[in-house]
Structures are given as C-alpha cells and as structure tokens.
Length: 325
Image (cartoon, rainbow, N blue to C red; front, side):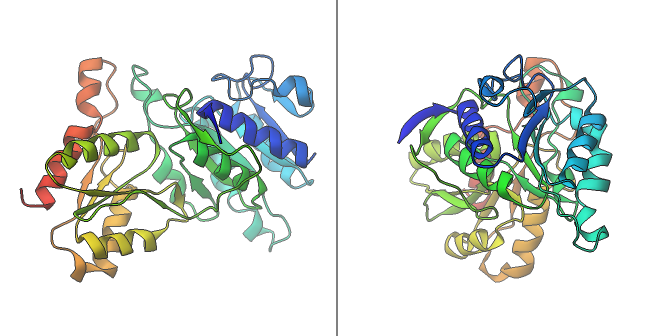
C-alpha cells in the first residue's frame, strides 16, 4: 500500500484507465495547461496530449453536450466541472440527454460518460457555490451517483465509473483533495452500489457519505468515552443505493441516525428514512433521526457557516436522542 492524496487518487484512476482504453478522454475548464483547478489532472496533458486532455471555454452546456454526443461515436469521456454548482448550466445535457439516450434509442446508444467535480460547501464560497447536488441527480433514472469519502474509495470507484456503460455523476469535495489515505500499489476497482461499514458498533447505526463523514467519526470517538458504540456506514454510492447494508445494521442496533450535508427537504436521508420505516419498522426502538444543513442558502460569514453546517456536536446530540439519554 502507498499513501497518497485524494487528488492523486483521482489522477491515477483517470490516467490508468486512459492508458488502458484510447477512447477515454478528459475535458473541462483548466484540466490541461493548468493541471486541473485542484491539480487532479496533474501531468496528464504531458502524457496524453491535447487531443485527450482538453481545455474548454467557460461553457458547461457546450462541453457537456460535446461529451454526451461523443459517446454516440464510441468515445468514453470524463467531463470535469470546476464545481457542480457550474453544472447547473449544463444540467439539460445531463438530465435530458445523457440519462435518457439508452432508453430513447431502444438500447442502441449506451452513454458511457463520467461527470465529475466537487459538490457541497467548501468554506467561504457563499450561497451559489456551496450547494450539494447528490439528491438532485439521484432523482433522475438513468444516472448513477457516487460520492467517495477517501482516496481508496475514490480511485477504485472512479475506475469502475469510467468503465461503466451508463452515465455516472462522480462527486468530490474541494476540502478533501488534500486528504491522504492508503491506496494499493496494483490494479483494483470497487463495485458501484455497495456501501461499506467503516466502523462496527452495537448501539446505533450512523449513515453518512462524502466529506461530512468526518464529523461522524469525530462524534463516534466522543461517544466511545461514554460507552456508546456507533456503527458507521459510508454509502459511497447514492444511486443505486445499498439499502440492504443499512437494514442489516439497523436490525442489530435498532436505532438509526443519518448525517447528510444537504438541505432537509427531499434528500437522501429522507429516502433512507422512508425505506427503513417501510421495510424494517419493527426493528426500530426509536424514531429515525436525520441531520442536515439549515434550511437556508449557505451563508458567507464563517460564524454563520459554522452554525449552518452539521457537526460532530449535532451528531452526538441526535445519537443521545435516539438512545433516550
């Protein structure tokens, strides 16, 4: 095993797949000459050249459409957004073209494309640059949605996403690119649609994903001192979602808390809450608790931002609530 940064895991995944398959290319703003806005494509222009690592104008609708269209001629593009907030400009290409081509062509045209970039808040970027889009895209049939929380998962899942014949939304975080973690030296992939139990526990199931998962681990460490053991599940994939892993954990702990960096209305935690109460209601010893951001646009003020985002203290409070402590 080797220890690398999250951004290096992304670059390795793309580079290894591009060496394996010449139909794969990377396109987006600043991905080539600048080595990526977050240096997640560092060195790729030098290795693969300007025909496979392509800088674009600031036109997300344009290069998203070019990417989708190129899948119909046998290519497998990776489209990088500087942030998924900017993907809103190209969302028509994703929702009305990429996700529907296979069905509307009667299966004649698969759409093997990956749209990737950061989601969620990243400090003082204010309301229009701090939005979480996982539930938006997961709401659309035909799309797969992946949100890794560490370098190992990021590399293995991105390689699988690139090989997938369906469009994949691959969401990262500006605040995770410098995170370090162990990654195997050799070739590996991870299956899409499989959650992972990151920490075993007997008292409560804590479900989360992406960078906010760090707060789950902080909360678990705090609660260990009070003899409360949390079982932490990292969803990794949002669509398809691994309900079974959640169900089996809740059957053991009888309590569920969901931590998600998104607004409280109509999100992933809402969907999980419904499925758990629908499928395994008799195993619950307390109502499901979900923890989200405040129901307002993200503030710019660091003081307000701290209040807006969920944190370990919020998790501890919710866990004690379902434990009636």
